[in-house]
Image 1: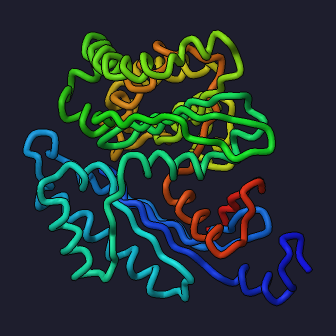
Image 2: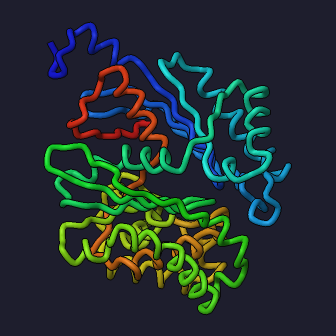
Amino acid sequence: MSELGWSNGETARAQSAAFAALDLGTNNCRLLIGAPTRDGFRVLDSYSRIVRLGEGLHHTGELAPSAMDRAMVALKACADRIERRQLRGVRAVATEACRRASNGAAFLDRVRDETGLEIKTISTREEAELALESCSPLLADAGRRALLFDIGGGSTELAWVRLAPASTPKLIGYVSLPVGVVTLAERWGDAAFTADGFELMVEDVMGRLEEFERVYCISHEIRMGGVRFLGTSGTVTTLAGIALKLPRYRRPLVDGHLLTHDDALAAMQHLRDLGREGLIAHPCVGPERIDFVLPGCAVFEAIRRLWPAEDIIVADRGLREGMVLRMIRDIGALSSGRVHRYRYHA
């Protein structure tokens, strides 16, 4: 018998199963295919492309034809990868761009007709829950409360979490702000690269966070102690890569890294000092992300100013990992108290 109470045959069958999770966001299209292991899952395949699905959405309220075409190219690549494998389960979700766009549902109907992918638009609450599901292993023995934040393309999710020894973290409050790196970049344009423009972005986001502070009194909880911060997004992982002085981005060194307050400030200032040409040339940024880095830093800075923290746990994981873990848990391959490891072999 295995440690989970399975026979050897059951263990072998569970570990031969594979699950696919697809996350269609405002800026990126991401796919992950993973197979269960005793303590989490092993990644068999992963795919990520910047598609800028939400381009222009802030101004028009609709997904643009060119943005939908870009996304379709990536989605067809994902469908091909899924088709090549025998999978026990597939889940595909869309987030803020499709939630907000008046033609979001029609676009997902087109995706189904052209690729066979059934993509469901999820709520902001489920988005926060999936992020927490994937990041929970990093919060083991972390304290009594945690603030998890995910700076996305079209929105920013924050989850206020109760922690307890030998217990699954529990979501006790969440908020989804309708601002992300794409929406801020479109609103502020080149002003995001100026000192005044950056400060205005920070003040805008701080104003949007104040209601969440009033409801949950997070500042008071921080003063009481035992509150950990965890960030999961391209912004936070980029700051960690800068702080670690990586010649190129390396997920194993970033995921789980403890980013100190001083290192975060220094990394942000370094990015702001680089200017456009420097950001394009930087190995942790590059030309595809140049317009989104400083808007993401503005959201990060707003969170840091409102709720100062000595350090932040950095997570290079998100909705895809959360979906895979849920599907694995549904077949009984994980217990709620198990530490979940993600082995990226792809």
